[in-house]
Length: 108
Length: 117
Image (cartoon, rainbow over the protein chains, first blue to last red):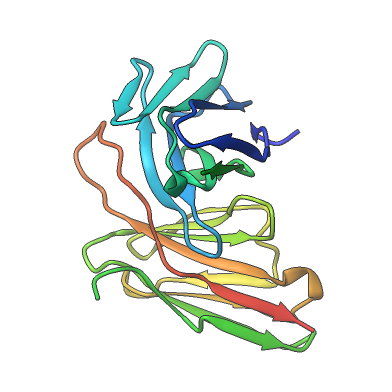
């Protein structure tokens, strides 16, 4: 079993839709949590950090449930430019563990 | 350009040859990471440096792999006796260290794509 697991998708949604991605992590010693975005043939870039209190950045909302070891990302009012792979990321000590990513396609 | 740079961008080598990749982090960043990414997977952690000290190594980093950051600035990743399974994108990232409790973003370079024939 992988330490960070995500639904690989792909998610195919129309513009304007709301889409939610889930991620689970297996090591309770994990300390900090992030969502990164990776466009095709590009390097990953930080989308947002994830806190237990939940955090929102425009159309994006991230949530962490430490008891269930679960992380979520909600995208509202999807844009064509949101099409990408979304990577769930967990830090444990000096290690950074990436999930395999969830692919999103937003269609006009 | 103040971003993370990697050299070369592409490398084709024959099985059994040695290869070396270079990463130049953002100048004020003291943390440096190496990852390997294959198609359809997320980046896999290989190793972490804080300044010149290598503080963490993945079990993925077999004895054929070695990484250095001699002066706490640029880093090199060497793969000896390459195998076809080493074919992947090798990504470098850097980040800064600041006040406790703050989360610091990792900035990635464009990667070096290795093909072992």
